[in-house]
Amino acid sequence: MSDTDDQGNGAEPLNPRETSVLYGHAEAERALLAAYRGARFPHSWLIGGPVGIGKATLAYRMARFVLAHPDPRAPLVQTATSLQVDADHPVARRIAAQAQGDLLVMERTINEKTNKLYQDIRVDDVRRTVTFFGSTAGEGGWRVAIVDPVDELNPSGANALLKILEEPPRRAVLLLVSHSAARVLPTIRSRCRLLALRPGGEPSFDGANPLDADLVVVDETSMVDVILANKLIKAVAPGAHLLLVGDVDQLPSVGAGEVLDRVVAEERGEQAAHRREVADLVRDGRGHSLGGQPAGQGGRQGGGQPRDHE
Figure 1: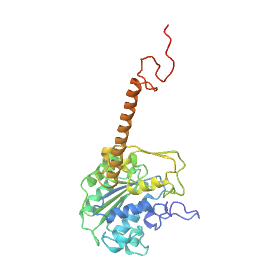
Figure 2 (figure 1 turned 180 degrees about the vertical axis):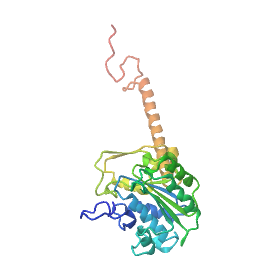
Figure 3 (figure 1 turned 90 degrees about the horizontal axis):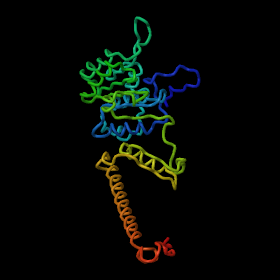
Figure 4 (figure 1 turned 60 degrees about the vertical axis):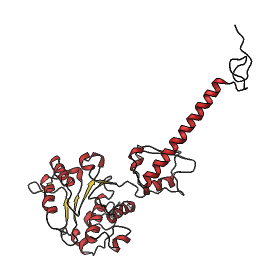
């Protein structure tokens, strides 16, 4: 949640471009930070979540941080714990004043004829990205575009955006805000890194405050990253069961995926051995009585009295 979501004092809420604080989504910020510091920073992000949760605020925070700190290898970036940029920083001031040349925001605009907002984001607004990304970037060389929200693109606008995503310019970042990421066109969604914001903010469950459940089921386990998996395992109550569902063939071949793959393989081996033991017992039970006499030679299996023939 951002400080624009609930003013509580009747004051006019700030626009996300002016908002300096974001509550409850430190984990999402750390994910963006880690990616930015990495060798292969994804050029497109789809930030999803309910209305008012702080998606646009997070997008603007990321835009400020990248434009204010254009070198991912800089010590300040490497040691940062959040995307916070001082409100007095020149980049922050220019973004608040809508005067940052390296930031393009696509959103519904005012229809001059009716003096009302258009019903959707027009294709002409999206086509501005061609000129924007084709021009020379200033200062640090990064150019950032925010679509707020991508749900309001009309079909022509969505197709125009797709062309940009298919051939992303160098040192470009696209931040797509969505109230329902599942409804975004699959061709757009598949070209973005999904970052979901959920009500309640950061997970509050851990070893001291475990989940109140006897069985925890995780679907699509191959999509769970190491950080989330670590939190999840710690939050499972003692004596509870954790069921992981997914396709083992989709697990990463290194890191946590490799470890889980080995666990699955070992579990399969143990299950196969158990099945062989059961089969051996069944075969042994068919050929011998529990009393040690072969079945069918004067005794009932199980040591009972011989059956009377009628």
